[in-house]
Length: 96
Image (tube, rainbow, N blue to C red):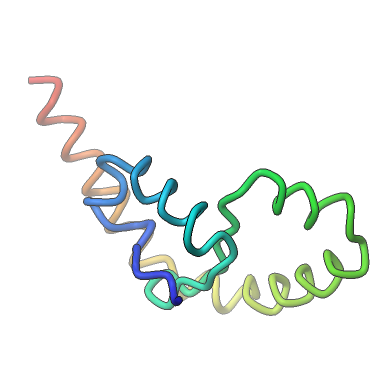
């Protein structure tokens, strides 16, 4: 099942925990088309990726390295700036 949740959406950020619970239960390692990134949601999987399975981790790091190229990261700039502005605006409204 593809990841339907956009981790950068306001809905996700306002209350991420139900989304994380669904991901852990239904789709623990998934690709977010909207965010163009892999999401690993279970601690065991993160540990496996980082420590326990070096060969598998190497394959995943290769995928990640292809994803996080300077050009790709730069292409995220407008989205990151938009999310940052929205968060700052929301925090400013809360402090009033």
